[in-house]
Image (tube, rainbow, N blue to C red; front, top):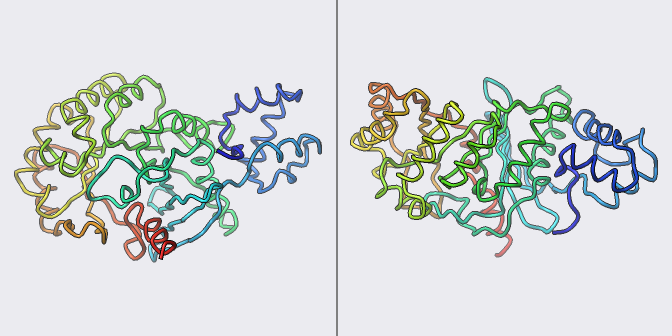
Length: 354
């Protein structure tokens, strides 16, 4: 890895680094103030620091580790960004305008090895994990974009659901969560942050012990092992019994509601019998369960899959509701741009190789 991003340091780590350099510990809070409150774009703008310290920061860290390559803005205000990292690899980040505020979906890996057969993210195998600094930088890049517009808008919510499996990059994701949640920095509330996993059971258990008040979502997508293993290769390693056992442990330790993400794919997982199977799977945890039914975004490379009809989605929804399963049909964002996760990156990489 090349020059690290300063965004990857927690406040404690920055204090420790400054002390190692013979600097005063209180400078860390000044630097954080410049980074996250004033949100400067260059170390030279940190005017209450000595020239020597500014030079040291400039020589040691990157302040802007992402280079904006493409921006696609949807009619509904959803904005999709393609960023280039320092080593020229590409990632995607998405800004979504919700009723409750501005939500950013961040990427945690370059590519993905989970192997979901319906997903654009997995079309390119994982090349590396992102550092905590590169994940934080996605939030900062979008916040700078909002600052430039001058409307006083602020990123208020985060979903860790972009390219990659967050729990396959666990330590960097946890560092990222601690940085963006810190009261002296961006101060994005833990309950405004959701981390999604495809079902890495040991990491779900570890996350339960972490103490963060961050929300957890499970990419479930099927009510039984037979369908889920066809859709998601990870299910062969961590089948539903193991995953649900880890979820039970998480619920018992945290008493926090969990969201089950369920992509609706025609003729694959959207039949009434599968809705009833899902009810049976979740019946003992109904009080802390919330099912998010997601209309599938078709991907050109996965032509065997089509989105469920509106009629089938509503029928599925009705079965869940009648059996007292909390659920919602997710409102779609950015359908007039490359809406599926990883789609913009895949298209750009294809063009580059032609």
